[in-house]
Length: 143
Image (cartoon, rainbow, N blue to C red; front, top):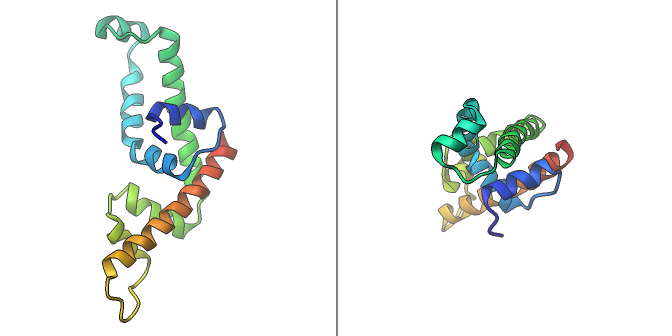
């Protein structure tokens, strides 16, 4: 599953289902997509001319529109999550917490646990994969 960011963006906009790994990749690259939309304020033709970009004007326009649309779909999917899921996802992708830190926020280690760090990482990974699947379904329906 070595899809590029833009392959994933186009997949969401076309209304196709994503795998949880693709959802993780999309959310971790959200800042890149937002930076792309901020750079769209210039005329498409002048960007291509000044930067000597090899992207065709229509391809650039499609990419710009897809970036805006995927951000709308992502926001809609996030808003429809349960509070607990939204918090866990936000800890990882908004606040940049590690898996261990997310796991600590989700649950306490059981008594007598010999390897609490691994326990927390696995708890966080399972929780985030579950949320990614829920987000994939919501984005699929929201496209």
